Image (cartoon, rainbow, N blue to C red; front, side, top):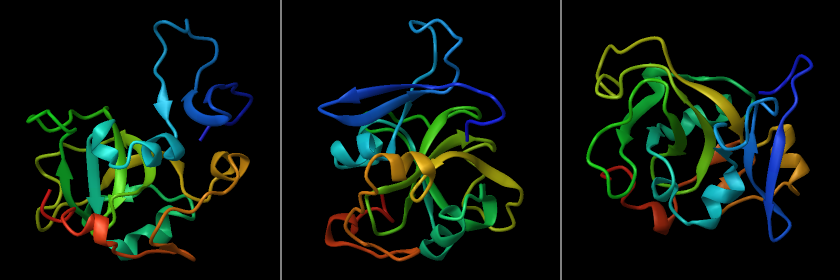
Length: 165
């Protein structure tokens, strides 16, 4: 969600945009780099690069229209592979639907990970920065991972264990 006269820089590998630096005015060595969905899909499982907020599959259609992730739609939070600690508020996270390992968004965690997925949790959970269907996705050739059908994310064999991860 870069706009309002903002500028961004893009990092390409083998002709594919894999990282975005949202604030091109920042020093490259100190700037935050946000992985694109294509980068997350390349590594196979989003938790290889980022912690993951698992959402209920019906929530994906709202994210595909640009909405942020709200707490009631969160199933659970999974730490990054090899890390036991849940991500802190403000951390970059991937957003995946239960049953499908392919990320449908990348965003910034806005609520304590330990509270997400609990009954009665309310408010904004993830500020979405990049999502399946946005202009960056379109500019990268509009790739569609397995299980992404229309505005829905279906479960896949590869994602059979994401609900319990």
